[in-house]
Image (cartoon, rainbow, N blue to C red):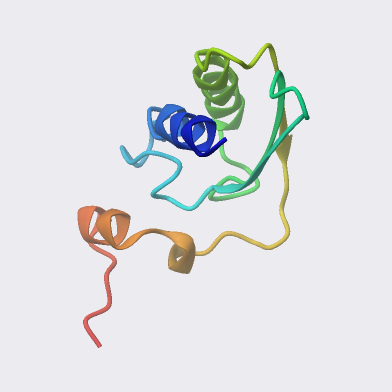
Length: 105
């Protein structure tokens, strides 16, 4: 199961936010991934950086495509959620440095 989790994370890391140029995992946009017992159905809970994000549909499509690239997965549902709200605090240190938003306190 750990191998599948690693491959799911690797797949999601290939999805790049086209406006920010950083992958959605490092941006902290993925909140949860649930797998069915047989690992054939994945449900991804994710958010976007803003409610009006014009790239939302494209990012969702890319998430679905990336997840379908994982051998076991045959179906993917992506839920866009707004709670908890996304903030820059959800970004990894890498993303903060890349985007120049790291606080050196």
